[in-house]
Length: 277
Length: 277
Image 1 (cartoon, chains in turn yellow, cyan):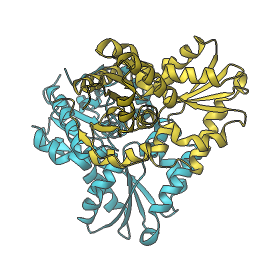
Image 2 (cartoon, one colour):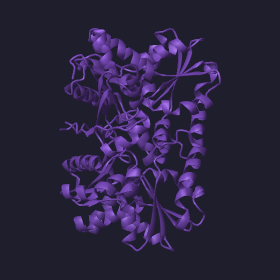
Image 3 (tube, each protein chain N blue to C red):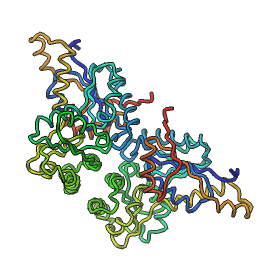
Image 4 (cartoon, rainbow over the protein chains, first blue to last red):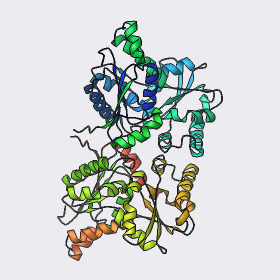
């Protein structure tokens, strides 16, 4: 392995972060990736700050011990509740998904009114509202706890999911926010619902998720971390396929099976991790 | 505390086991109860045998260390996947919910055809099918992964939940099982859906849950464990209110709030537990 080839650690409570990994692979294909899915303890979205922070810091240390030179917290709940704690505990740069998501929303909005959907924990933390208000944008946050289980049931284009989305979005795009023009997908499961959410959201609404803008933020960090390389070598390495390694705290078989739904292709190298060992 | 007053440990991944505790309080009001809800790691229903067994054994040891003289595994997934492991690891009698549930189904059926609904993990284990076939009954098991999140969203009598239940029960009461006459609620969240399930299930179907029959099985165990007491003393103690202590691995505040939905009254004495300590 070239010493210049970065090892990027990606952490999520389960599978959702694979949508972020997918975006990373497009923007930074010439890197090695170590993905940690805390599937034995998922979901984080209904849990408390203390519990989520403790789990996330354990995962961050695990990825560092496997050589990660930069950590991507590809989980909105962990970012919203524990980014400071993870950053303090880590010895390498840490990038979360909330700031890049807010940045993407700011770029997309015309009238400055944003609706954010996410888990109960993400919404309760008001991390998105704070990040959006810091950009002089108005934010309405709406918890949608049923969307993750519906995605995991595979009902990504199902009449029930559409009905649930209509209820949630109906409550969100109301009162002062009927004319909000951006919908932020504040949970990494939701990109799988994009076509359905496009149908259900008001016609003028642009949907943004943080995967792509997170990937760009990571690329910018990497440029600071690893100095520019000679063009020839760089071009050679660009052609190299990214190397992927996956760690899961619950069943490896299930991680392979559900994971490919999110990543879009097979997951070869999946190892089981017991964090108590 | 009278030395004859039993301490009963009740274990669940979260709140669902409180429906079993409720039945226990009716059948055995003169006991002390220690309830352990592993809310930081719930749900168990989508996790592997290894993970569920490890979590459940830790919880069993915790309850034993708090004086439990008998353990009730008030979680269908933990019973289905790990009852043997828990029984081997414990030093006191252990009662699960699957055998009592099968017993109740056997008593309720006329034509010997039973439909069981439960989590993905419970259904994959085929614990109910084995328990029912051992009683010469035919069983159709159906995983209903969305029902737990719908109950936790509080949508216990909602049009969406009814639509989801129609889909699941439509698939279960089909082919050779259209005339099944008993529906076993193989998950402790489901009793909250009983009125809705009565509407959705075929009219001739009797719904049984294992809470009540589990409570009777526990009472029978207790009689063996603690010898009969003088009638006068016994009557005095019967009048005593059960003492309840709750342990939760995630937020105490949330346990109090969601817990009373399942138990039907306030939860006073809730302590936070960190199993890593």
